[in-house]
Length: 120
Image (cartoon, rainbow, N blue to C red; front, top):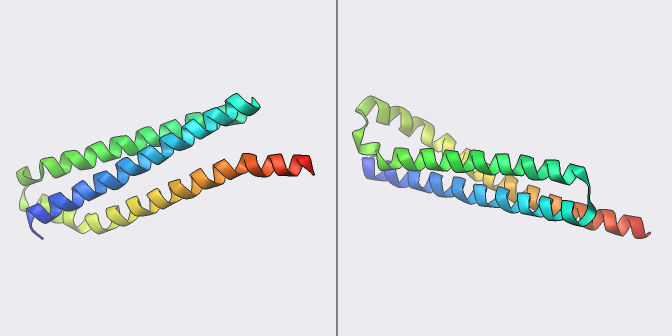
């Protein structure tokens, strides 16, 4: 694999991770709005947890972008090791993004479900 292909893959990885960070931030905003609406302390805990997940993903995206930007500086051995792990990094980032979407959906539906069960 050429250096330009690896750079492109690391930029794609950084994009997946940045999008996942945005999704976690939306989850945090949802949890905080749930806290403001229902005044449950557990929602505030969820908001903090989601903020930490968003921060972690943002730092991973920044690291991936840094590797993509400086890929031409690496030796052939280092580039080979990164090439071997890239396949698993991309799969992991895609899985994390899907998991974040599922968590956002589940968290938003949690209050909807609790409101409908309280009414019956």
